[in-house]
Length: 96
Image (tube, rainbow, N blue to C red; front, top):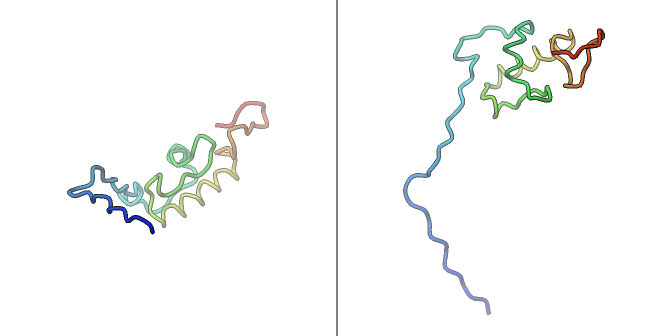
């Protein structure tokens, strides 16, 4: 026969930490189009390994995340942003 354990006590009151909801910076600025030529703005949404950051990390809404990824991919194809941190320019220097 098994022994029944008492239920753990439940916490009462408010939780200690609330995660602040991130607001889409493009929605706040009323951006109509994300341009692939705005390299400084696009780099904010890339990791140190030049990967596109996730929505939950950046706080960008779904629509603008799609626009953002398209703009980053266009800038990569035009060699404005490197594909990887080890990517070298044809002239011998590092991209970026």
